[in-house]
Amino acid sequence: MSSTKNILVVGGAGYIGSHTTLALKEAGYTVVVYDNLSTGHRDACFGDVFVEGELKDRAKLAEVMEKHEIEGVVHFAALIEAGVSVVDPLSFYQNNVASTLALLEAMQDANVKRIVFSSTAAVYGDQTTSSPLSETLSKAPINPYGHSKAMVETILESAATAYGLQAFALRYFNAAGADPECRTGERHDPETHLIPLIIQTAQGVREHISVFGKDYETPDGTCIRDYIHVYDLAEGHVAALNFLQGQNTGCFHAANLGTGQGYSVLQVINAVAEISKKPVKIIEAERRPGDPAVLVADPSVANQLLNWRPMRSDLKSIVEDAWRFANA
Ligand SMILES: NC(=O)c1ccc[n+]([C@@H]2O[C@H](COP(=O)([O-])OP(=O)(O)OC[C@H]3O[C@@H](n4cnc5c(N)ncnc54)[C@H](O)[C@@H]3O)[C@@H](O)[C@H]2O)c1
Image (cartoon, rainbow, N blue to C red; front, side, top):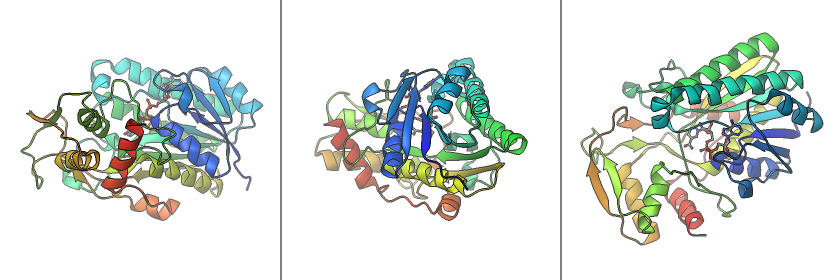
């Protein structure tokens, strides 16, 4: 068994990629960050080396992998807004699927066999009768974003069988929070994620936060989601890479990264108001189409296979870290 020391983090300038780079470095890996900076930030690149480049550039990726003797890839680079994917699906299939083929071909060129892939709970779609969501459910995405991630999972599975690739798809639930040491955090532009939007409201940057639907079948009528601290997500990638190292060639695994516990929109708003000690003005709005009442992970596969358990994903730690970063 060879040890994986040099890792290529594609999309490592982004929110989850920058935290994962820090976690990999703390675990003793050498990291090359590869990113086109389309949504990422140069000052969030913590790798030993930074290469500005496109995911679709097979030749450049292969050159980088060979030059730095890369032994494993963590792949975050993607367009991520499900709503945008409905109005502009081709850009999602181009960036998330076609460009990932170039990455996989470059891995073949450079004889790199291990990959950990950023997948998403969106591959399950709206299977609300099956909460918590387990990997035994079939994939049933309801938007092009979710389809693009499900397609890449299928491609990875085929490549594992055909070429001996070792692949792990991590299906994240709602990534939230920030590095407890404030070195990086959530900076999407435009921001669409709930916790940063509530924080911006508490800061006075936004006038109010819209609550889409207060008549769901949940205890307070608002949607329930499974929030996972980005630091716990980052550690999940380190665990997945370590796991692949002990596997035979030609394997594909998928695991949820979530806590198994959900919080409602109102609970999250109250937590931000309490921790920030600022008022958060709420506006009630209509339900959004495609928003299930409850989305919560069954994390038992990640618990068992990766020996991974979230350590910072209680709502208080998530909001405290996010609030500290937003005010740094
Ligand atoms: N944020 C979440 O809650 C969440 C939930 C589930 C899954 N995910 C997945 O996790 C991954 C990372 O999400 P994030 O929130 O960190 O997003 P992000 O936008 O902050 O990070 C994506 C990074 O990839 C880079 N990138 C995008 N397209 C590229 C290309 N063609 N070539 C090179 N670099 C490119 C961007 O510049 C950015 O640095 C994505 O694949 C996303 O689908 C995120």
